Picture (tube, rainbow, N blue to C red):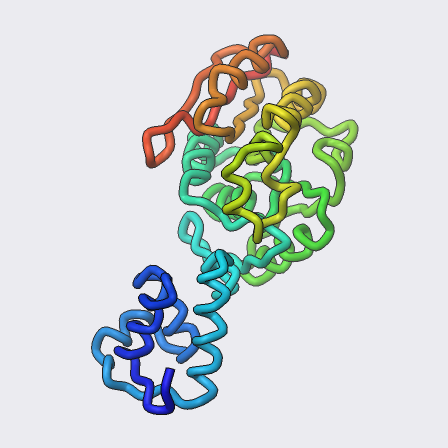
Length: 275
């Protein structure tokens, strides 16, 4: 970009760099400290040297595949603005399917005990805490840096969640819940799609040769941490619903069913602990 760069020429530079126009607007607004809508009415506004440098850096990182949410430092999820970074997965809209299902299982007036396994940015736990304020929500993650980010999100949003460090159910030994939810890693470790996700933490994505290792571990241990009649709801890959339903059936769960995501893929499967 030249010393006389404007909003219009900056967006043209994004096209030449191979960056989507919507992404470019978000990044340019971020570099200018302006909302993206402001750009529409100010395409002749000039960028100073510092703004040009910041925008050029953001464009280069986006062109290299870094998620826009990492570049902006935040991502909206279920009406919450969450801080995100490379220590956590970027929250996906498809995961809102899991939140909606969980909310159906939580009576607004009940002080249900809820556990979110592999919380990452805290997206699921915080959405449940926001919409079911009487629920007692706990969230677990094996990554201390992810957990610190999730806890910071909770403090900023003023939402009370119990943040616990450890592997799956290990931090809640001896405790039982009315609802357990999880969006665990579920991508097969040799899946070619992982190449496009290189900027996100691999440990939060891949889970064994068939992608089911984490799901198996959760289903196997869940009955020891669910109240009789409690629910286990799981997110999984678009083609894994039959396998996850089989795991739940083998684990003694009943009322097993699946839910479709926004793209009409089977994205979540859950069941009830008979007790």
